[in-house]
Amino acid sequence: MFEPRVSADARVAPRHGPTTSLRGLVDPAAARRGFELVRVDPAPDLADLVERHWVVRWDLPPGESFTQVLVPHPVANVVAEAAGYVAHGIPPGLFERTLTGSGAVVGTKLRPGAFRVLLGHADAVRPGVQVPAAAFLGPTAERTGAAALALAVAGRDEEAACGVEPLLRARAERVRDARTARDLDRVARAFAALVAGELGPGAGVADLAAVVGTSARSLQRIFAAYVGVSPKWALQRHRVHLAADLLAADPDQDLAALASAVGYYDQAHLGTDFARATGSTPGAYARRCAASRDALVGAGATAHPG
Image (cartoon, rainbow, N blue to C red; front, side, top):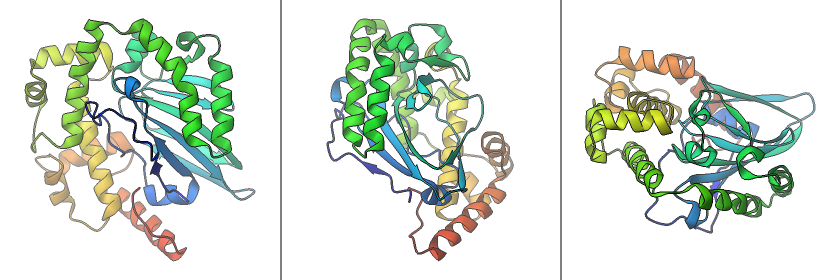
């Protein structure tokens, strides 16, 4: 059931490349049996602040539930669901959501640091913060979120995404300035380097700062002010995302070789970071993904990590 797709309307301006990967779903083969995920590109004039819009839909048999676990990226999501329209900052740990019955959720995944700019307050970088969208998008936000959700339920994903953009655009026009643009460009450059694989195995914060063209201390200050995590955390989280994705694609691979491939000096350090981020050792995660893959193939679907 999980078949991620992207809008055919490729509206992102070329100068704004990816700053987060598509990774993060724990056990993606199992996710394919639980829900459908659709990703929609933002309008070009919002691409400095918005990574992508997304829609999740599910339709489960009576009495059946599905729990999806995410290893979060260091970004905020502005989410419209039945309970309301709310911005969610970086979760302090794993994000878990149990789905039952049928329904949909529509969200906007902001770029790293963008929530700090849009909210205009340091609360944006507080772990686990939740802010009503109306607090920074204005009094019509709840109505707009509800309308977007109705479109998502109807399968009109591009319309749902476009429906929230006028509020984001109006807010962006009020809060953008030269300083925040410069700082967000530096944050975006750092994350884009991670996603593009520009850093070699064992790279550290100084290497990441060199790619950005600043000092390690300056990069740490910018991350603290805008993102809410350190550059070291971002490096570790990217490596865990990559390791989890590779294990989902090939659960039988050698873990020592995997550790080296994603930038660790040894398997032990990968195991420590992986368990801290996912709640599971790499070996246990591989076995879980193998079991889900086998179950998916047995059900007649083609297993892939999405």
